Amino acid sequence: METLILHAHHHSKARGNLLETRSRAGASYGGAQPGQSGGGAGGRRIAPGPAPQAQAPPHSSVPAPRRHKSRPAHFVPAPLEAPSRAQACPSPPSPPLRAALLLPKMAAAALLRGAAQGRGSRAWSWRLRATPKCRLAHGSSRHGGDPADGAAWACFPLGERTLVRVRGPDSAPFLLGLLTNELPLPGPADGATPPPARAGYAHFLNIQGRTLYDVIVYRLPEHELAEQAPAFLLECDSAVLGALQTHLALYRIRRKVVVEPCPELRVWALLPDCPEEVCGAAPLRERTDRTSVLTPDPRTARMGWRLLIRDEGLVPVPRGRLGDPRDYHRHRYQQGVPEGVRDLPPGVALPLESNLAFMNGVSFTKGCYIGQELTARTHHMGVIRKRLFPVQLLGPVPEDGIALGAPVLTESGQAAGKYRAGQGDVGLALLRAEKIKGPLHIRTSNSGQVALTVSVPDWWPTVAK
Image (tube, rainbow, N blue to C red; front, side):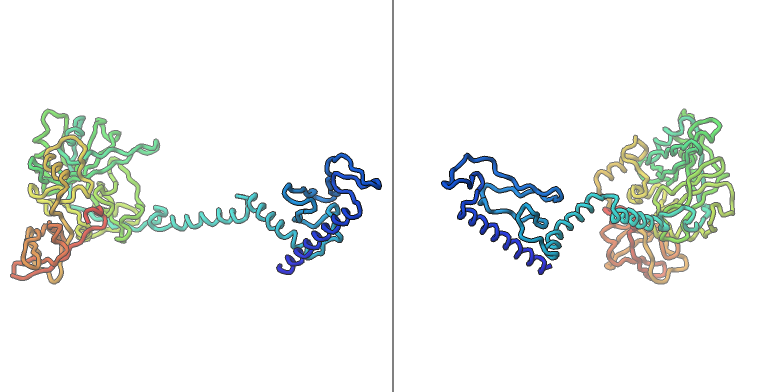
């Protein structure tokens, strides 16, 4: 390339010297200059006319060079291509010179062709073919793939949970005045199938604002009912079934509401067989009919799905297996989810200390309900000094277990909170938030000590960690 450019430079310089010599020779021998005539012995001057323009031959694509005002008459700019006859080149350019002159133009033409191709170019087509492959590979994981390829489900029959049916024209406003949360609404129908039932989590409170009963509320589609009136199912601890019915009857004054037990339906909990897939894509579809209700657990995705069904003892979902309820409660304690009267003693537990807000169990924008004053004031003050934390016991556990309500102490013997309930080496404890990072222990009945560690569930809001 350097040789080609050097040839072009020498050729341009020789051509410029030749033109300058010819111009001087024309002036010495009386040659005509632009605007003058060379005829006659005396060199008679004539009126200046238009300057003759050099015409390019028909077969040439190079336009004739034009003079610049600030340059002398004999200056001719070097063209980008090989010189033509009109430019008085003494000899045709050599092959190296022609290649050097055409090389920049060929490169520019290639760039212009690439810009003109745009989306039709080969590079663009390659990008369009390559990008979807990456997206498909990213979307084909077990968490986001086809529901038929999901994990197997562990199905736990919960004999300690039962159902209460509340139905009638006034059932919705009746429950709104007693529960801490809004009522679940049925999902939109797609025309071919009925709208699926929805579930919600809430607490019944006493007038002091303390928890009485924790419930999961299921709303049944009205088209499944003979009277076409709203109907709800309340899942509660079977130990407080009678007390809950009495509590509802106490406030059912002149309302068109029917409260009755629902013993024909059983409560099941469904968890993915692999714990790491509990928050993945669910290979189940919500449904509701006269014999079953299937919906996600409203408290947290870590708790899987909830199933209400008539059949007993059979695996209720495809690719499911019958699980031990003790495994369900162990998982629940590890996730910090209280359930039932052992974890939430009636008249003792406070809803916000029990992480009711974390479990989507309270609405701070709904209308009034019993026990709202203390709950709303605590929320707006933004100060919750104690919470239910999941704990794990280290070392040998006494045969009779840890007593419910046993004090939890720091290394120096100061009170950090109370052990609420548990199973085996896992459980829940109501602890002061500033004490959970230090070493803690519980004194047992035989004058021993059991150390424990506190964990913060990863599904809790960041502000609480």
